[in-house]
Amino acid sequence: MFEDLRDLYQEVIFDHNRNPRNFRVIEDADRKVEGFNPLCGDRLTLYLKMDGDRIADASFQGSGCAISTASVSLMTEIIKDKTEAEAEALFLTFHEMTTGKSEDIQLEAVGKLAVLAGVREYPARVKCATLAWHTLDAALKNQQEAVSTE
Ligand code: ZN
Image (cartoon, rainbow, N blue to C red; front, side, top):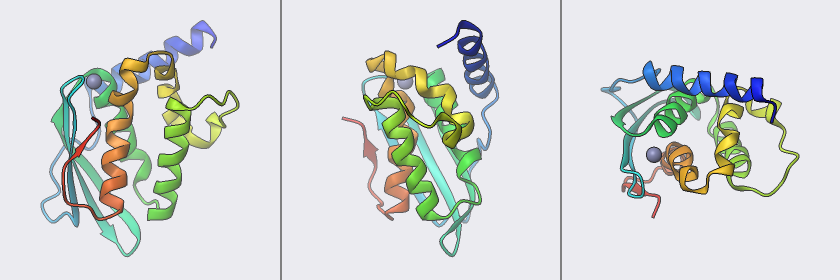
């Protein structure tokens, strides 16, 4: 990865950590799932407001490290107005991007999420980045129980 690109990516992560998007409760949420990463201590509650099979609104509460906060903040921005199937496809792409061995991930396909591709070089941080997405996966499958990365 080029150094200037890495700096840009870090800037986006810092920005979302300092200033998380959609950090609020959705009082009339249709889906509400808690996620926990015991390895790092990241905790979040994800809220989804559905309109048919479309995600009309997404928000979160909780506290965690910079990577987990930036990841869930970016995710709530990106999944809004996506259908359940589109969100599930993004989850699979994101998972492959952060944990896969493939070098030819279509970074353009994931948009701003590409800023988190760098965590694959830091195995201890992968769960910080994927916690939000595993929690989303549970919410899309309408599971109620809390998600743990362990
Ligand atoms: Zn973390």
